[in-house]
Image 1 (tube, rainbow, N blue to C red):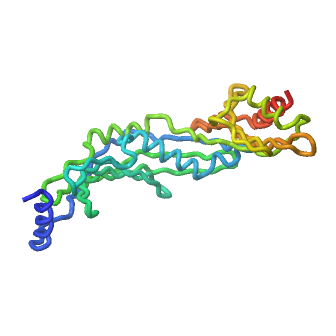
Image 2 (cartoon, rainbow, N blue to C red):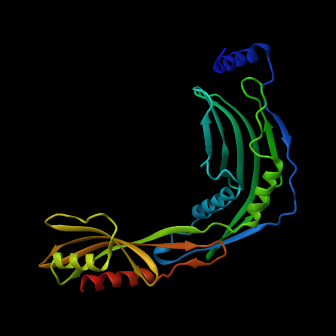
Image 3 (tube, one colour):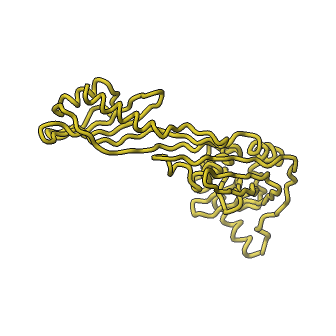
Length: 288
């Protein structure tokens, strides 16, 4: 009899005979030596005022916990087919509530029909976030409890735990020992300016002094459309440009962007004046 038929038969027999199918729950002892961990993300101003938000801070907290707790190569779930109908899966889920970063590790069988048989380990990190006029302060507490659901597959064969108790403790300690995640985003500014040259000449100036981001510029008889990157003061900036004839001269419409970063130690890589400096550089190139 095939493995698939054996599995189906076992499932049917479990309903008929009333065999136990619920997992056994056990508590996993955890060390209580870790201290609280604090992060502070300073709010930014100007075009970056929407970078450090409550949502961004929560996402950085989730990324920090996820990065330090294993299975990072799985992107939630890894798996391989054991038969045409049964897939061995393993991985973890990380999600936030208003007060905890919850983690569930899992390992077991997933049937093509959708049925699953999983052993799981659950734990969570309590946290609080305080918002002030200047920053978001995060207080992350150590995980104090963990439980294991030791399950069996369709043939009532025990499924090994997705993570050992020792490894779990090591990963939980990593969360409290390792640095937190930066909040990395791009800021944008758009507008237009006039140039006292014809569009073809302005286009040539940009091509000569900036680096194209696309294989070729998209243009027609009326508008030159470009995507460039350039370095100014150590910052790599990006710009989309439209150049077209306007009242016998050229009008340049731009959409500028550059990266910014806010770190959990309260520092940031952001200069409110930078966007103006980048725009001045563009205007200078257009008029060269």
